[in-house]
Image (cartoon, rainbow, N blue to C red; front, side):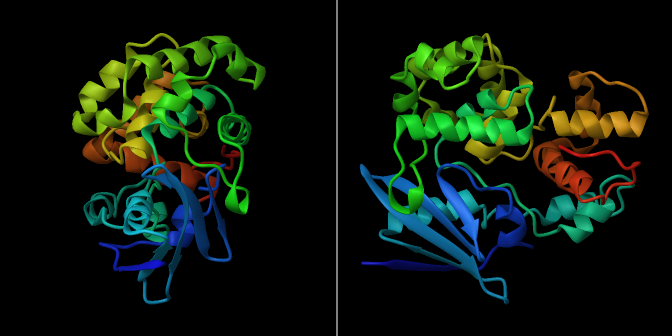
Length: 286
């Protein structure tokens, strides 16, 4: 049986923009179709999403549970029109927001996957981080249909030995932090807690910092209010704006004007910088 779910996104939405760099060990975007391998009720299911010219998004999966999971991952129901109004005349972000107005942050299928991403990506470039993340996920769950693996769960990461993660390339301190957090906390329960409490809890762990906590909030929990403080791409952007070396913590000043939309503003700043849509001198973006 195939379930077909037709969704009209709330507000401006572009699957092509949102999924363009969203590929990882669990999903891919090819020829306008996002394909993801999801683990639902103890079974693996492929789910697919595509967008018609009129904007409607069609999701196909083997069960309604998988279809609804992909619907959440795609963020089609999270209208960001208020953010677009907020930054419409912003001297830094205005042009990028107008040209990329359908862009949204896709989510990970599990909070554990977001935490893994937040640990793998500390202080290294995006491509290297994604390669390391893919290596860890495939070691935990060998690829299945379409060469994809399901997103890691809290239990899967808790059962991993830190030395195993180190052999895969993860820094010793970060590997220990990842396993320790997963053994002491059921990450999916973070959905029930406010963003501030989640950030404080994660940042209290040795080996985790503001950027890792922000990735969990933005991609694992679907929260738009906590920005990617310390992101290397934002460090490069701020350096270009200020014309001097900057510290990672200074990126908080860059995101502060966007308030409750700091997380989504991070996404637009990074995308706009990479595409040359920000009024800064030509500097290679992350």
